[in-house]
Structures are given as C-alpha cells and as structure tokens.
Image 1 (cartoon, rainbow, N blue to C red):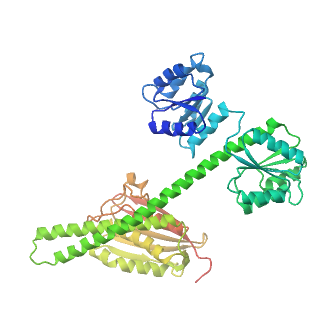
Image 2 (image 1 turned 90 degrees about the vertical axis):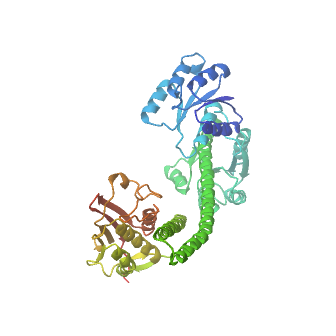
Image 3 (image 1 turned 45 degrees about the horizontal axis):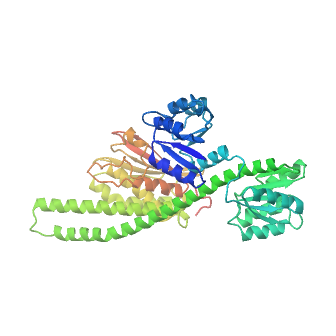
Length: 500
C-alpha cells in the first residue's frame, strides 16, 4: 500500500519513511501542499499524512483542494503536526481529516504507524508479537491458539496456571500479551496475574482474562489482581481480535517509548562520560596557566600594563576553572536525584561556618554580612553537610557579588512550628534582578547570568545547582526582587522530626 508523507522537514519525512517502510508500505514524499496535490493525482496514495505549517500551500489548503476531487474524497488524511490546538483540530476534522497526531507526543512516528495500520490493515494484528495463552480446556485453548497463529502471532500455550508461570519465567523478555482463563487447576488466573506482575516483571504487559464467571465480585477480583481487560465466554473470534488489537497497539506504543527512554539514558551516559573526561583534561593545563601566572606576577621588572594583562589571564583562568567545577557538580547532582547519605544537620552552626568563610570577601567590598537566628537556633534538618554548605555559599556569594559598597547582606533563620518547617532567608540591598530575567533565573547557563557590581564574572550555573540541591533536601526556593533595591531568596526545609 502507498502512503504520501507531506511535510516541509526532510528529517520528519525521513523518520516517517523509515518507520512505514519497515511495515512494508511504499512511501512517497512531498515537501509542500502544491507538491502533495500533484503527487496525489499522479500516484493515487491509499493514505496521506499531512503537516500544517508549510511554504507555498499549508496543510489545510492542500487538504481542502484534495477533497474537491472525486478520488481525493476517499483518501484518509492524517494530520501529523506540531501545531496542535483545539481550533486546528476543529478545522482539520471539518476539512475531512480522520486523525490528528502531535509531533510533541512521546513516540509520534510509532503513533503514526499504529494509526496507518488501523486505517489500512484493520483486519490484521501487529506483526512480531508473542502471546502466552493459559487455558485448562484443551478445545478452547487450541481454538484461541489457532486464531492467533492465523493472525501472525507467535503463541506459547499452557494447560494450567503453574505451567503458564514457568513458561513466563522462561520467556519473560519475549511475551507481549497474556490471555488467561480465571478458573484453572494448580494456579488460578488471579494468582497467575499477581505472580506475573510482581515476580516475573510483566508489570505493564496486557493481560486479558477469559471466563464464564458472571458475578460482579469475581470480575472485580480479576482487575484487583492486575487484569487489563476481561472477555466473557462464549466469545466470537471478531470480539477477541478487536480486544487484542487495541491492547497490542497500546503495548507497541509503550515499547517504543521504552526504547526511546533507553536511547536517551544511553546518550545521557555518553554525555556524562564526555563531560567527566573533558573537565579532567582541562583542569591540568588551567592549573599550570594559573601557577605560571602567579610566578610571573612576582617579577619586579614587569610594567603596570604587563601586570594588568597577567591579572586578566589569572581572572579568566579562575572563571574557567569555576565553570568546570560547576559543570561537574551539576552532573553529579542530576545523576543522583537524592542527597548522598542524609544525616541530621544543625542549621545554625552551618550558617556560622558559611558566613565566616565569606566575611573576608564581604569586607573587601565593604559589604556588611549579618545573621539573624530568631527562635530557631537549635533546629535541624535531614541532609548532606557539604551540599547544604554549597547552598548557603552560592546564595551568600551571589548576594555579595550584586551588592555595592556600603550595602548589607542578611541571612535569617526562622522556625515555622505549625508547618514543621525551617525557613532560611538571604536578603541583600544590591542592584536587584530585572523582571525580564526572573523567569529563567534557576535555569542552567541562564541568560540571567551577569557581572557583579565590581565586574565579578558568573558561570550561569550557581542558581541552577542551588535549586537542585534544595530539591534534593526536599525543600523549596523562591525569590522576590526590586531592581535597584535588592533581592530576597527564601528557602524552606522540613524540620527534623527527631531532635538532636
């Protein structure tokens, strides 16, 4: 059968072609609506997939034109587009579209393939599927197996629940569908379903029960055990195949999504490995550059201009080293969604440690760095000491960086006993944050990154790292700011239930 794929993106057309040709469809391509009209007349496709936004003639206009011809009125047209709104759907269906598929869905090309199969091969089940059939009645079992094999499925059959369980363990990675009777010797269908879901690992595999049971309570027990669907005996061949077809198409989408997730995880692993290798290889030459720069700066024969240039080299090297450290830290945080080895953390002493380490930096800018503990001196949270100190250091460093001489940075600690929360506030009297920067403030490599009041450079990663560390500690972070008056970051963390 012939499919006309209409899309102005060559990449999209290639993906569609590869997917549909694997299913033995002949694929013809068109890059715009006018070309689609011409090829519809020339090639007489059995189905058309149509994009909306295209040059020369969009998908709506092309569909309307195709529908004006006698032959074009019978061709199913499936819209596959990124422009998926209610108004677009209404317009598309009004023009005669039979389906609307968003390119933003989890597995759009697989969804297209399932839709095309449903439209053009409605009497066939998806190919290359394996079904496990558990039925103690030999005649019924042979009948079901015969029907499924005739439809192209591979069938593994068992005469009772215990045998079915053994076969499922042996062929776990192959099974795409389970059809089981409810009342069987040795192991009934409900027990079999529970075992398949919990111990064999077929958590999402479709399981269809076949039974003559009519009591509502028994039917509910099937679904409580993990059934996907239920079909009452006696049943017709058409009814059985219709139920199977629906679940097989959904299962194929799930499998495609799992494959996509696996590929993304593999790409993430490659990215992390590359980042680790690149950062390690960059650190050594940077340390050498910084070391030799410090040696050269001690040379008494250098002019003021030469010393300034060496200072620029040192500052740039330190910034690059800071970026490398932040990238490594962010990669570690994203790879581990939970904090490492959480333990009770007394908050006030850690605040004192963080403030003491930055007092010299604040004094060099003539910025007052102050703390206020209220009634929360003895409170504690559950977390990782180094990560919590990094949160405090990032926020205090930022506050000092954007506060001019004569300004003030205050770190407050308060106890919210009713909510069982600890609240941290870092407020400054600095330059504030423009409203245009607020939306992306916590994003990686944010455009909100800018120089401090004395030209201090930033990596654009500090607040992104801070937010992820706060979330790892099951906390929240928010910010309010007035340009020219200062900013206020508010953090909350769950109070440790068991006192220190």
